[in-house]
Image (cartoon, rainbow, N blue to C red; front, side, top):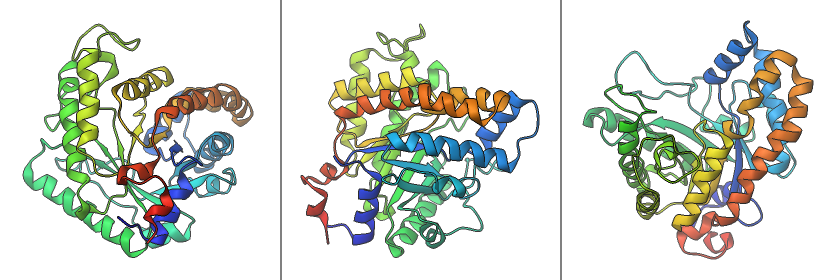
Length: 337
């Protein structure tokens, strides 16, 4: 197994000295603007979005191996990151196509992988809403879409991070008990598909394969049981076993306590995950502070509680494995072409 020079350089840039990806995510756009507006009770300007992202980046990249940003409101923030922090840039438009079924993705119209690379990206990230249980024709479109991005990343020799988030094609409650029961199959099936070489994915950014609120015997447990603790560990392992590529976990907007507990359960399961790309679990509780009190108090909150949140996650990463071990080697240099 060999990796091209550009991809190897990019992967090393977003990992820490141990080869673990301890990255922060700040590429939220539509959801962030909506949350800020709700708290502020007024329109959220472009300058506010840029300031929020820059402040998070300045503070949290001192405790992260990399930051994920978007080229819409995050380019100024790229200049505020710590000198040793790598950069991932998002390629997709916020949200999805809601004019037809299937949650189809779309790209930022004025951007390409070449342009993201020119903007300083070490890696490119694409978010895809995906479930193996969608109509065959819709998933065929999504497969072809990812193949095109994979080819574009190959031609520019830049690592491709694919993030996939499951959903219910029937429109059911995706936070409810019934969807929780299907989540392990959705995550495992998605990983099994996109680990295939044809897609050119270098790192998969994946959901925790269970909903911790329905795991009996956890602190996050809400009262309804979808799986026992032992069953949950089996689901973690089943998802990991279908992957032939490095994978990292996303926080999906849950609380810091719930996310760290899920990482502890992953470690207890013996899963060899390569790290995290964690956003809202570190900074979302500061949204109201920024909206109501401004950037000064928000920065102070980040420097205390925000840092505490990301360090909680970092402690869990002591159980993570270097990304290159997914290829059966002991150092990234062993993959040099």
